[in-house]
Structures are given as structure tokens and as C-alpha cells.
Amino acid sequence: MIQRDDEKIKKTLAANLAYYRKECGLTQDELAEQIYYSGKSVSKWERGDGVPDICVLVLLADIFDVTVNDLIAEKHKRRRRAQPQFERNIITLMSLALVWLIAAVTFFFLKITAPNLERAWLVFIIAIPVMFIVAIVLTALWHSPILHFASISGLVWSLALTLHLLFRIENMFLIYVIAAVLQIIIVLWYLLVNTKLLSGLSAAWRLSPNKQKSKPAEPSANNDAEQS
Image (cartoon, rainbow, N blue to C red; front, side):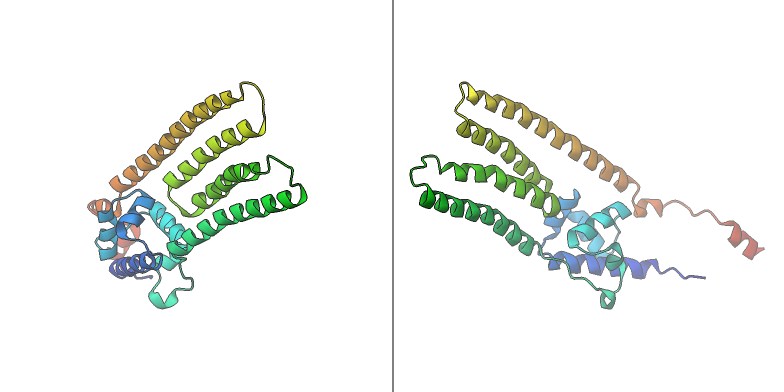
């Protein structure tokens, strides 16, 4: 029969959570913000006074770039190292800078090959929505929902600006009305998604293992048979 050692698993998980959080360069409050919990909850988990539910464990494993098994394994069994958040921030900034480098190189060649091209500067305007597209992808992977929301909003308004400047059409400024409507939809979508997420985590908190342990365990048929 497999013997359970809940306290050992709880202590191992607590140590691993603290280890991977520090590896990622996150404070308890910063980690809590990413999983929509309070810093006190993270502190409690790292002390071994409680454990997150399986949904939160999956989310934590994704943030730390490890598996759920890595979170509950002993230290010497760890095989993967979490990627620090600092490195992710640097990669994000480098990716955004690369967009502007390409724009600058394109502008340079346009001025060399076509010096009379008056609107070559529009290359930098086009680079703005391209930059936000890159930001949308990276914030969805590594960063907080608020940065993802800001990137989507930036794409909407930068596209409106780009189209307004590219096409010299009468009343083209009305495209900002479309952008404003899209912005309202994006705000409502953001609130809807995060409200659902917060509600789900709130429900998970009400069914947390600590509260479930307060319920008396029902004896199994096997135990009854053994006792008899």
C-alpha cells in the first residue's frame, strides 16, 4: 500500500514555491498579482500552512516555466530552471527595439535610393502598430493582463493613426470614432474576462484543501472490511 506523507509534500511544495519565485525575481506580492491572489496567500503557501488548488498550481508552473511535478518534487529531482522575469523583460524590450531598428534601416535605404520621397518618415508611423503586435504576443505569454490590455489598446489607436496619415481621404479622421468604439469593446472584454477569472478563483478559495480537511472523512469499504 502506498503511504501518504502530506506534511512532507506540503513542505516540499512550500520550499519549491519560494525557490522558483526567487529564481524569477518576483516578490510575493508580484507573484500574487499574476495569479489574482493576495500576497498573504503566497506567504501562507511558502510557510507550508496551506497549499494552492490544482488550477493555481498549473498557473504557477506556467509562470515559473516548470511542470507541476517540479513543484512537488524534492530539490535534487529538479530538472528545469525557471526563466527569470528580468530576462523576459529584457527579451520583450529587445523585440520592441528590433521593430524600430528595422524601421530605421528601411528609412535609411529609402532616403538613399529615393531622396525625393517626401513621406519616407511614415515608416516610423507604420512601426508603431507593428510594435504593438509584438507586444501583444509577448505580454500574452509572459506579462500581466493589464499590459496585454494596454498593448491591444495601443494597437487599435496606432492603426487608426497610421491609416489616417497614410490615406489622404476626406473625413478620414472619423476613423478615430471607430477606434473609440473598439476601445470600449476592449475595456468591456477585459472586465468580463477578469471578472470570470476572479469569480473562479474565489470559488476555488472557498473549496480550498484547508476547508475540505475540516470535513470528517468517510470510512471506505476496504477499511471496514479490514476492521472486521
